[in-house]
Amino acid sequence: MNRNALYALAAALLVGTSAIATDAALSPGIAQAVSVQPAIGNPLQAAKALAAKGDYKGAMARVREAKAVTPKTAAEERVVAQMEEYIAVASGGALPAGAINSATAAKAKFAADYRAKRYSEVIADAALLRKFGAYDFASQIIVAQAHYLAGDHAGAVRLLRTMGDGEQVQSLLLSAAHKAGDAAAAQSAARSLILKGQASHWDYLLGTAERANRFSDRQLLDLYRLRFLTVTMRDPDDYYLLAQLALQFGYPPEAEAVAAKGIAEGVLVGERATRLLALARDSAAKATPKADLDADTATIAGAVAMAGEGKTQLALNALAQVKGATQKPLAELWSLAIRTHGPADFVPASSAAVEVPTVVTDAAPAAAAPSPEPVAPMPESAAGAPEDRGIWEILKDNAVAAIAALAFLIVASAGFAFGAGSRRESRRPSAFPEFKD
Image (cartoon, rainbow, N blue to C red; front, side, top):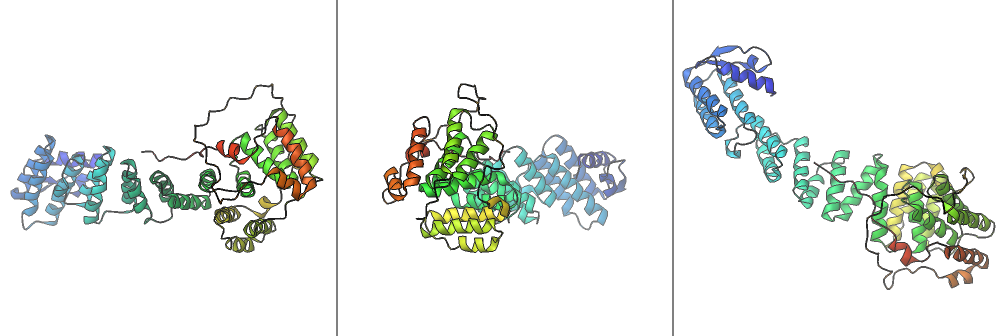
């Protein structure tokens, strides 16, 4: 019922004790009066007067008097119902639940409680809406929001999990689950949203995976390849780290492509970027990829190669077989990437198509960037966790790769971060979208 309809009803009530508006009076325009018996007209007039004074509870009591009169014509029944709705809406939700006698009145209280930020009342109003068959999908969304805004994030998660897979539901579920510390629900919602085309949630999903798992350097190479693929590289450190890992494991063309991309986009600047690009190019003809991969890592690598050949289902089937504690999360992320990208995105990286501009020297001022939020350093690998490969193991495995590694150490002394501790301490939480009222 709109505001004009309420005003029309109020005007009709001024006609007289026995003149009450018909349904036509509830449309914008001139009220049309009909005769009703005094036993109905008198309490309705009294109800209107009490409502005008703000005594909505008393007004509703007089409406109940009119409702109790029998028999009533269809027109009289309609007018009594209209007055009841008028008082419910006019009260702005001030009526107690016990005084609510219609779906319209219940919805009016529900809306007023939400506007006034009485979130505990909004949650309680759900039972009232159910009573009158008015608890629809939109009402459930509002109740879930009320749980969230009241700080009951777990309650919001419980409700939202029953409401399907729509974008509105999953967006609120992601935020509520994150606040509730329900990592499984949050990651599930992020994956659902990514599949619906909301690629911005890759940053959250990859950041969560990095913080939740003790990845070895080889596994971090996969993780940062996913960042590069999904365009969620956050800063120069991400580019340097991915290029470093690609060089470490014998993929100089990939390192060159990453460096060239960072330079072309103005993210990597100065001599440090120049040296990285030169090192990657110099190593391209010498180093070969490490062949000593564990079975799960080899399966992931093979699946990514199949995706690049357009063998999507075979790649997904292979990734489903990965069972390792840290490899399985990576396999799931690659599965999601394969389902949301085309075969051309998985062709081995090359810098041939990237035009590299003249690199600015370190002395040139760079554009100011927002300061990252402080974050506590991540712990070093626990006993029994996969450890990073040392430089002497690299020397022993492959003399040619060792030369490239030693050259890289020389560059590192000029500014590269090398080693798991310093790398992980530099990571920060990814941006997270908040739900707001």
